[in-house]
Length: 209
Image (tube, rainbow, N blue to C red; front, side, top):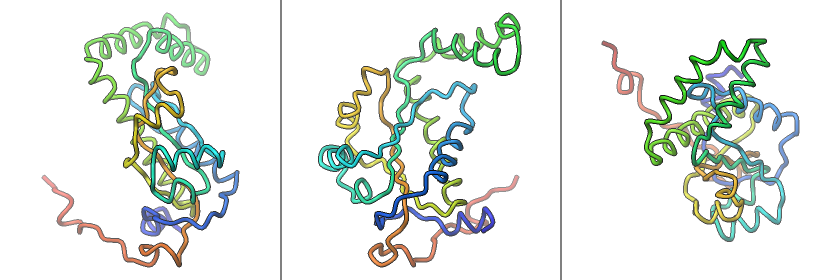
C-alpha cells in the first residue's frame, strides 16, 4: 500500500485478535519513535514497551479497563519528563558532539539557548511542553505501524496516577501521558473493522490564504 492508502486503512481498533506482532515490525515502530522530531531534539520522554501478561492484567485491573489493554500484542506507554535537569542537557550536548564529531565548545551557544528557553518556564508549562512531544512520537509510530499493516489504538482514557504508581514513574522523573496498543484487528468482533472512515472534506478542513 502507498502511505495514503495505509492511512485510509488504519483506524482506532476496538478489539484485537491476540495475534503477536512480528518482532521485526515492533523494532521498526520503536525505531520510528526514536527518529521522531522533537522540540530542540531533546527527546524529553521515555517509552515503556509492555509485553508481560501479568503486568498487562494488572494494568487492566488498576489502570485501564479497555479491552485493548489485554487483547493487543504490545502496549506502549509514553512517559514525559517531569523536569529538565542540567545533566540531561549536558548529556545531549555530548551526544551531539560525539555523533557529529564536534567540539563541545562549538555547542555552547546552542546549550545556552536551551537553558534560557527552558529556565523561563513554570513547572506546569515545562511538563506540558514535554508531554506534547510524546504525541508527536505517537503520531509517527501510528503512521509507520499503518504502513507495516499493524493496527494501533491511541489511548488517553486511563488512570494516570495509577499508571505512574504501577510503573514507579515518579522515582524516574517521569509521568505518563498516553498509551498506544499494537496488534491485529479482530474483524469479526470489532464493530468498526468494516466501517468507512469519516473525515472532513478538504474544503472544510483546509484554509488557503
